Length: 277
Image (cartoon, rainbow, N blue to C red; front, side, top):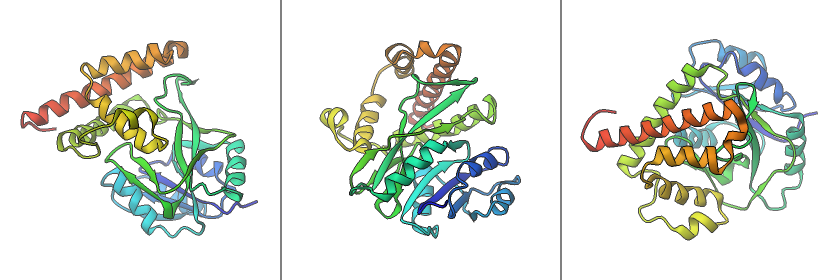
């Protein structure tokens, strides 16, 4: 049975991940694949599944997703936005159907995501498990060059029931490192150019704002001003959030994330010195 929901999947060389992703949204009759000029069989796989394929060169995450909301011909007002390495569980699909059938004025729903590494659900070391992935596309916009923040123009609620399962290491450790090397350059550039942040962050908004997007923006600004940020990141994830309970996978993941933070710090300092990034 089809639901009155459109699905948007962002892809770049995802021939291995895409089939399972598409299978997890087979209940949808309006699937759109926004492809960033893949060189493998991604677009053929999407087209054979019945998805509508749109090709656009990638520039940055905020601009890419905003372009999709403005130009992709969605059939329905509600859009479920996922990546090719994510899977919609049957329980989540049912929760999505119920949510859009009676949204009670809500324009965006946060969905709980489970990240997996080394066969382990990273239950504790995720920075956050909740992401705004189900929304009315005419009421949503995105900001930031990387790790884009969702900015809806109306009420937001948590969606109870089911998970969005994520395999961030599906292409291997080397690809994860390569991707986060690029991410760190985006992050360093934003810090250097003062883009994506706020000049005068508010502690009140960082702690108590009801708008999770606003709260995250102000939290990030305070976070980026911390001394010894990579060490602070490690201690927060591994000790404060009890990441050590996620075992070997948790330790390995926190070390990778701390290294990623260290890259951002080094590249931002390099830019301030007038060097290359």
